[in-house]
Length: 455
Image 1 (cartoon, rainbow, N blue to C red):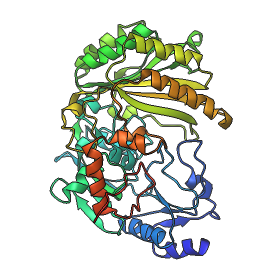
Image 2 (image 1 turned 180 degrees about the horizontal axis):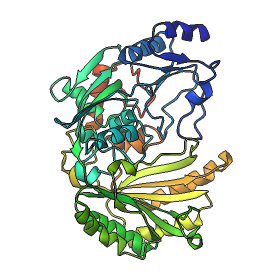
Image 3 (image 1 turned 180 degrees about the vertical axis):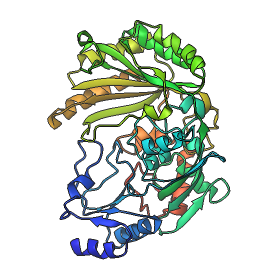
Image 4 (image 1 turned 90 degrees about the vertical axis):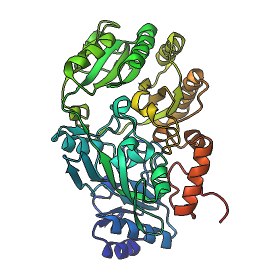
């Protein structure tokens, strides 16, 4: 493979890192610590032409290839065993037009990098809740983050894209040009090509209140927090994590190991209005720690530890409510877990996200009210079956009528769960678009949507 990699390198503006390269181990590392694969080559592409050549090379040699933006794929799709990784992380050009409130961004940028640059103009686009996530992956999956109730999903601010297809063509797509492709990439993931540039709408966000609020995690506090978050104005988005308190330096020592609700609070608007909107959350109980304050939106993405590579098993779902009974179950089950950290994350949705028609994009869960993610972190790989059983058990107890799933948080769970992300006519329409742009299913290392049958 070395000679083949050398041949490819001669065709590229970027560079090829093979197993003999001193940077290989660093280059093959992704976010999650239990994903440990050895690609035959990592192609650090410099532009869309490099992407097209890497795809052609992989197809000619019959190699599987993965596409990496930030490397945060829960399912491990950011890398491959023995294949080629098309690594976008050197593609970081960002062109912001403050007057028109738009930005063209290459997909090697992280959410934190984009957000910091936009903040210098008092502007923002909503991504997720982690700064090191690549904007390519999170956008194609939908994008559920700190501005979801005020401005919707990330895809709701996607205005256009440039996509390299399986045939190596670079297509510009928007509502008027290849509109079927534009519909599909807004939630359909990487099934249709490699997005190399994305055009986003930017929103004024010069005033913001945010940070972490820590409350005791009693069932009443959990259920009441969810109710208050649902009743809050659209400007307020929250992400509540129920867990045992870690030994963080800003938490009192006496609460370490106790049940805690750690909430990310984000108010996109006037500071005084934000303080009033957040007050009902603070009033639920005496805060264990209160780090919510007026800040720049970019401060919601603090620097992350480079060596942090969590090992976890998780399950995602939508529910219609988290009442007292569900909150009691969450507390009881977390207390019973012996994982290094067991947690249940609750994201109240609605607002701007819910006002977009369900068929406007490939993200079909517009009316889902709450997203719940159950997770267990651990150290010993031999413990995974035990913690997976705990996650499945709690997820089963919390599951309600809504059988949907958010594709961005799916692990490697099989076609049934992929179809849960794309229910009914959404699945059928995506398969038709897949047949048009990738009939041979070249882009298959993803939450895969097979092309429709027939010619």
